[in-house]
Length: 401
Image (cartoon, rainbow, N blue to C red; front, side, top):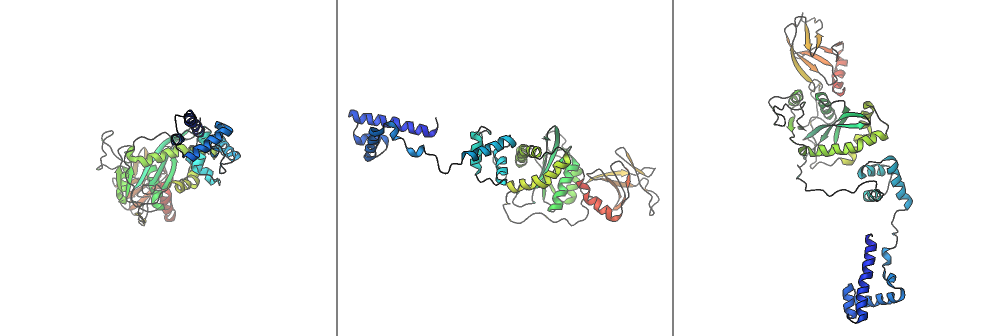
């Protein structure tokens, strides 16, 4: 029995009780009207209607009339069938975003109610007591979050999704898939933010081994022993902040739940099965749409971003390893022999201390102080580059993975 039926039956029962008391003489007309919560004149009208048509004449006709604003059955069926055929498993908010994009004119509540009535989505459970949220940074660029999520983004394949976002606005500056999260993917995300917006003030992350050195599992991070990533952030003047629990990264965790709910379905709908195509979809379609729906205005006007004007960003956002040149004028590096080419300024570099820069794409460069001696591919083969090509090479290197 729905609410309307319950109200109508309740009205019948109360009238029978009051009318019966009045007919038996145990209640006056005024007392019977008071029992029904109406005036004496209305009670007399009720009696006249009862004498003419029985209890059914007492029903409020307004409660059984179909609303003129009620949606046509065909429209309801179209929405339900669209969801059932093409969007099964999408949550109500995700489906409503698609519905509005397709020029749907109904409200979010209307769409959600129709899907719930059809048994296609569940009603939300009552939420428990919520802990106090950390306030957002007041300005864009004051704090940047980076996190990764391993998930089956396409059928039968698990990848890591790396997201770099702003704490103040939740705007996603960088999103891409990689086979495995690590130092290279972290460098790539940071480079995309700096190239797009500029230097930011602080970097917020979990205690992953590529971000922090943690002497004891589950313990505090050791800020005196920075990782390769930590050294790069120090060179850029960016403060690193460690999160000690998933709850502390609440915005990132909620954001990834949304991505895990939506993104696999969108990739499947678009027929995407490969990582390269998925990354193009993220950049060209998904990330702009996600930002348009979820990005919030910062609490204060302005920005904390500072334009990057200091030269080769790729030479900072890379791994740096100190080595000593061997007697064969080669540098041994992770099983590779990097031959230093002939130099008209110096016969050899035997026993010289050099720095090997390894970029996210796997390419390497040997530096002796400020001088670049040679550049190599990921297999240790020397790459011949002129000055113009070398500048473009290092500018784009972090984007290669």
